Length: 363
Image 1: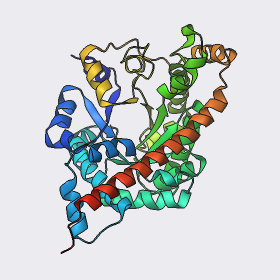
Image 2: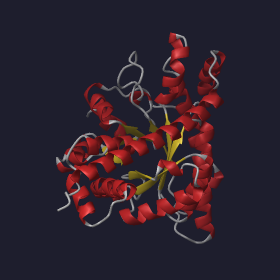
Image 3: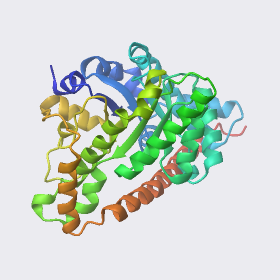
Image 4: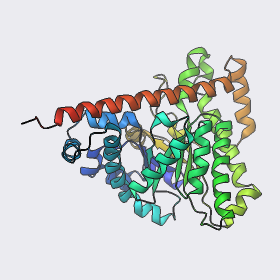
């Protein structure tokens, strides 16, 4: 049993944070599902840009799109993304069915330019979910204040959601509240309660931001402490009377998902986060190099405990060392939204350039 299968055995789902055409056409994703217990897929604009610019795998789809007289770059981006993600969703459909909707999802992101546009996010989310036409597709929505309003609306509509760009326990609790309100609206209307959702908490970006200013004994501690505190809040929510009532009616828990789990500090092991974030009923989304490294030489440490006191002790030490925890959380979310928008612009530019290169010459 390799280390990734050990994570699965411990009750944690491992999702691949990557999608590109050759993962599907070569059978690599199928192998990861079978050999490494991969049970979901996430993606983002940067990943898609690298896939499109670095290969000719998407050229035929682009040519067909142009031949049909369609020239909008954003529509083409979503067409290309959905081809891959729908194929991945079909590969993961048996997992989705076997777990009754608790696992086996892929994520497709609305335009990051909508991070502060509630109505635009809701409209785009509904359109993407309808176009994908798969029950195991999560619509990825940023956890900004306008985004959280959209999360509630989408969940109330029965559309599965991945709430992304969460950095703190407060961010997570706000995402959980949006999800719960959406489910409670369905309950009040007598609608089915099972609607999939995950809340994606970013981990290594904390340490990437804070470590340069910290003494060596505190480096690599911040992200894991935030995870531990958030995991305690997650466990408390699942034990609450409010959640137990909804669960009794068939609601699915909004699982916490640990994102940004590649190691950015070269002084730390390449599998540093993955082995320390194992916890039942959680998800870890993993870049492909980290996935392969962990399968080869990763070690599953003791299971993460919902020990809020221990987390608070570590966070207090970090605060005393000069880390403004609340301020950094907001800064990281704002920078993340800006970075996603920049990646989105780069992706649109990449696809536009490809389309111009492939457009038939005028007779």
